[in-house]
Each structure stands twice: as structure tokens, then as C-alpha cells.
Image (cartoon, rainbow over all chains, first blue to last red; front, side, top):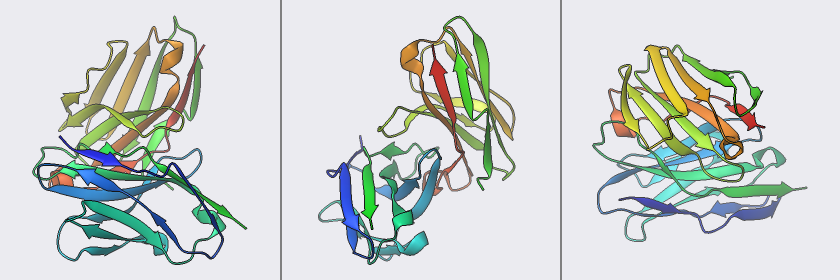
Length: 115
Length: 115
């Protein structure tokens, strides 16, 4: 079985500062990794995904994430955040070779950007 | 704008009512999903349809009844719900050709309140 841990339930940060949102996963099989963002009163939007290849993945809105197999981590980073980045961020995994994309989500991290 | 459209945006219903949630996508995706999201929690998978056939039911109570009348539409019929069923109900879709590596496209959800 797979599981995802997001240790930080909330990350406060000042505007234009860098930020890292942490994600660790556990799985006995190969997985695909995703980061989704959820703005207030909206659904989830894909930020980026890691399927294979280069461990540094770039996504939308200036976000990037690095896959680290030895540490089973997939941390999300942005060098300079904006007020508009305030949202809930979910890390998710799915098992490779699955018949459908059965995503397992972490508990989420609220990124609170302050002026 | 989301490519997955959910109606209604908000729904208030009594415990004896029967109502339906609707979801529509025109991206040609052949996998469609229902998720339930409680406040400050990650989405929880309820049902998955593949090629209009129910492929996953995550032990959801029978008061929730999904239906996929064609490849573009997904319904969730509600009957005799409990107040604890109040939540944001999210619909999602994904292509089936790449299965587990395909990111999900989410709608903005229906905010359901059961009184």
C-alpha cells in the first residue's frame, strides 16, 4: 500500500520569500508523484507531476519539485511567492501500472502568504 | 475556467430528500471519478468509472448512487443522507490510455449541506 505524509499543516511566509512544502511517501512499488493546488472554493488543479526521468520537475506558476528516491521525498519549492499563491497544496501518489489513476492524497499544507 | 463542469455549485437538502449532482466533461476522457472532501481534509475517493462501467466503489454507503449515462456525463444520486455527509463533492476525469500517469482534471465541486 502507498501513503503520503505532509508534515506541515500550515506554512506562513512573507511575500517574495522562498518556500518549501514537504512531502514524503511510502510505497513498496514504483509510484507516480503529483502536486495539486486548491484555491478557496475551487477544485484541485495540477501543479506538476513526476513520472520518470529528470528528478527536477518544473510546473505552473513558477513551482518546481525534486524527486529523491533515497529519501522518498518530493518537496515542492518556489523561489519567490506571491499573495496569490495562498492556497491548500496536496501531494499525491499513484501506483504505476494501475488500471486507473487511484490517487492517494496527503493531508495538505496551507500556504499562507503574508504581505 | 475548469474543463469539468459540476452542477449545482451549492445544494442544501433535508435528510428525507432525493437530489442529484451532475458532472460533465468534453475532453474525451473515459475515466470519471467522484471524490468527497470534508473541510480541511484531503479528497477521499468514492467511485471510479472506466468506459462508463463502475470499476471502483470504495465501500460507499448505498445512500450514494453513482450513474454514468454516457462518456461525458457522471451523476451522483443522493437519498436519505445524514448531516455528516455534508461536504464538497468533487468530480474528476482522466484519459485511460495512460492510466496511472494521467493527472486528474477536477471540477470546482458541489458544496452539499444536509440539514
